[in-house]
Amino acid sequence: MASITIEAITKTFGTVPVLNDIDLSIADGEFVVLVGPSGCGKSTLLRMIAGLEDITAGEIRIDDRRINEVAPKDRDIAMVFQSYALYPHMTVADNMSYSLKLRKTAKERIAEAVGAAAGKLGLDPLLARRPKALSGGQRQRVAMGRAIVRHPKAFLFDEPLSNLDARLREQMRAEIKRLHKSIGATSVYVTHDQIEAMTLADRIVAMHGGIIQQVGNPLDLYDRPANLFVAGFIGSPAMNFVEGHRRAGAIETDDGSKIAIPDGVQLAEGQAVTVGIRPEHVRIVAGPEAGSYAARVDLVEPTGFGTIVHVRLLGQDLKIYTLERGIAAVGQPLHIALDGARLHVFDRETTNRIG
Image (cartoon, rainbow, N blue to C red; front, side, top):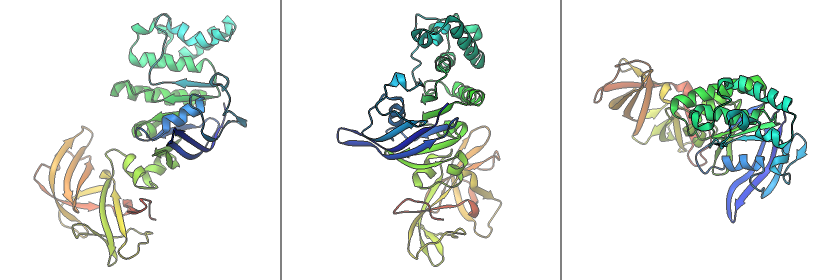
């Protein structure tokens, strides 16, 4: 396997900037997920590592070898795409072994590699089938098997689960994670799905507007988002945001309510801020208590495991995530408390975290 180093990478299409001064180091054997909305530059960065996009400026190295001018086929990287790209006239075994045959690998070595990959992916009973006789999840496993048999230095995944239904995505996430543990391959995975990012990654690289917004392990981004973008993108249901200003030792919201300033947060008088609180950190309390707020229920969304309750509070529409069933009904008045230790405060001008 190998490390991947990305230094000062810039990409423009004509005069349009797509990536801006990207620096990232990926350790040998690490599973890194690039996550962000469509158009943020994550797939472009992956394709630059693979050699499918030219580099406008900067340098990419695999181990200590500069690969800017190295042809894709000579980078010793395997890529798994959103589309399975299987040869329809070939069997599963032939699809998996095709790249090895092109390299004139010995038949015994091919049989050994295909057998080992098929065993890891549960494809042994399917080796004689053609792609039309496979489900979407089986086809994606074949595509991964085709990559595994090459024993590349790194695996690149470009939204490989996007074409699958929700249940299959869940199943394939687990299979990809087990696969990574068993072979220890350096992996770079692109997705717009923050659940995939949270469940798969050793580290997440959150991207927006061609810029890396934050790099860290999944719980780093969940517990201490660096800015408003990361705070709003990571977590489901999404974080609630309330606008306010520091006035007289507290944060005064746009409707005149007061929120206590969290410990460790230093604000100038009159400073405009955005306060974030995750729905799972908003509590429904039995009645009025110190620091609680009165609200009325606008909408209730049962999800099975929990319930999402929408209320109008602090001049905003807020969501509450609770595991208690039947705790709220539309039109019902509620008393709400915010977990002060779980509040996130961001400067409204810079959008960066404070404290």
